[in-house]
Image (cartoon, rainbow, N blue to C red; front, side, top):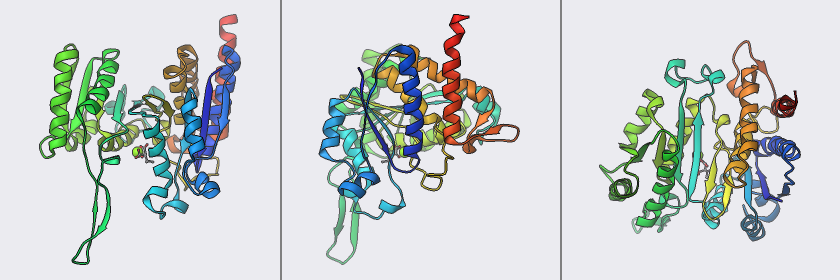
Length: 364
Ligand code: IPM
Ligand code: MG
């Protein structure tokens, strides 16, 4: 009985999580999986109730679960809190506590959505990229950090960007292993021309390739060039490896290739595992039944695949997503003329219908 800690979080996180739980329950019935869902407050919702973005109890529950499924955190209500009390700090604490160092963010352009991208169809058609982002190190966690008062009356804000050999090696191996099962190409992103830590990143990744993965083609790009190449020749990318901050940036860009941030799932894997869509809490559309639940539903499919070894069930969800898109169902973010515009809940119902219909197919 898989134990899943559900953290809907804030804003649209709640709506899209509801949809994905419905879908998982249907999948559970089909495959005889008795999911044990335990739902807890997280982010702003937890701040309002407990004064902290994540409680120790919730962290303990996360550690005791097979997987954590989360929606999104944050919103204007909490953005002026001190850094350590912000909803985002709760997410970072959860990632760190579970040592979920490898963040996998697949960006796939569905044929039915090639026109939803802001780039030309011929540029994005067939794009299939896996961004592997280091998630528990780098500038997000480096010490020292803070805002200090200087003697001359000014203030000074500072953060530290550092990576150790083992931190780079373990994330590089995850990326190379994934590349092995794909097109065997890896692009590592850095800023080795300016930063020592990124020079070290580059030499370490190169050494791992030479000694352990000689059959993988390795390309290094400076981050400024990489963000440009990604919109210029997105189809030539297979696996992208990046540190925490560059990975954060490049995964939003990769998302836009697919038409919308509302399409991108992610898995954060290590000691524990957190499944989180790439999008945020979208306070501007929260509570209006407008959010796109696809990223979250695909995120739950990643959970089935990576934490619960239920590849077939994951595939059924992915296929249901493909079919609703082919039928022309769209949420507002990916809508264009001639398509059928649906709310978050209704989009969920269409996906559920596809999964159920699929059930009958083998019986015919
Ligand atoms: C993401 C988000 C988070 C991050 C925020 C909400 C802390 O942007 O998952 O990409 O920067 O990692
Ligand atoms: Mg981000």
